[in-house]
Length: 382
Ligand code: GTQ
Ligand code: FE2
Image (tube, rainbow, N blue to C red; front, side, top):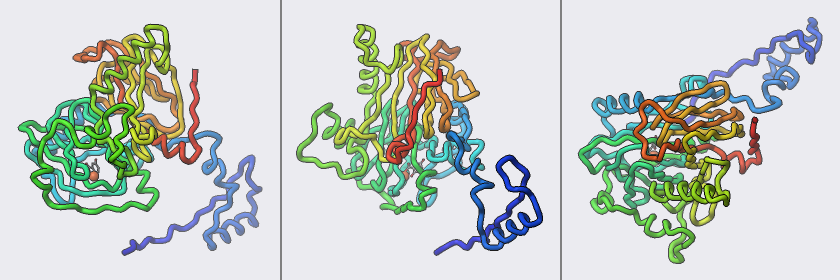
C-alpha cells in the first residue's frame, strides 16, 4: 500500500543578492521554466544546503522530571496499555521539530509508565532501544525470553529485532526512560515492526534477580566460550548501577592519587560498551555516565550529532549553547548538534542525593552513526 501524495510545486523567487544573477525578465522566464520541469538550481539553495558549519533545527530544551512523572502517573490512571498502542510511553518533543515526538532529529526519548501488575505486550522492531532507570524498581523487561530486572541506575540496551515485553511484578507503579533511534529510522524509510504473542509464558513471567544475559556476559574481561552474541547490539541486557557507580568512584580515586584516568579534573566518565566487541552498546546509540564532583565544571565541548541527558543524581547548572538551567534528579535536556555543552556540579535546594555531592549525568547520543559516516567532529570551545 502506498500513500498518495499531492505533488509539491517548485516555487522559485528571483532575488537580488551578492551571489545571485541579475533579476531580469529573462531570469524570471528561466525560473518559470525550472518550475515547470521541477528543477531547482544550486545557486539559490547553497547557503542552506551546504552551510559552513552544522546548523541544527533542534534547539536546547529542558523537561522537568517532576512534571513528566506527574503526567505519566495521570496517564497510568486513564490510559490502558495493550495491543495496538503497545506502550504507555510519552515522548519528549523538541519545540522546533514541528510537534513531532522527536527529542532531536535522530533520537526518541520517552517516559514509560507501568501500573502494578500490568503487562506491555510482546513485539519487535528494527529500531534500537534502551531503558534507563532513574528511580524505582519492580518491572522486568523480557528480551528474547530472558527476564531482566530494572532498578535505579540500571542501563538496559535492547538491539533492534529482539522480541520484548515488560511486566510490573509489584504493587507499585514504575516509571523509566526509553531511548530509541525512531527519528533516524523514520528518515531512512527502512523500518519493520511485528506483533508478538499476546501473553508471555509463565517461565518468562518469573522475576529472577539476574538475567541469563548477565550471568553469561557481566564478568569483566571474561568472554563465555559457549555463547555467541545473537543480536547486532550488546549481548549483555543490563548494566547494573553497582558496577557503573564503582567504575566512576574508582576513576576519581585513581585521579586523586595523581595517576589520571579521568576525562579532566573532577570529571569521571564511562561508556556502556558491547562486552563481545568493545564497540558502542547499540549500532546507532552511544550511552555514557558522567560524574562531576561538587564544585567542578566541565570544559565546554561541541560535537556533531545530538545528545539527550538525564540527571541521575546531584544537582548543578548545565549550559547548552546560549541556554543554562539549574537541574536536579530526573531532569532531561537536549544538546543539539554543534552546540557547546558544559556542566557544573553544585549544591541544590532540593538535594537528597547519595552521590557524595557529585552531579551524575546519564547521556545518550547518535555518535555511532556519525562515526560510521566519518562525520564525527569535536571541539573544546574555551
Ligand atoms: O518499550 O518497547 O518508548 O517499542 C517506544 C517504542 C518504548 C518499548 C518506546 C517502543 C517501546
Ligand atoms: Fe518496543
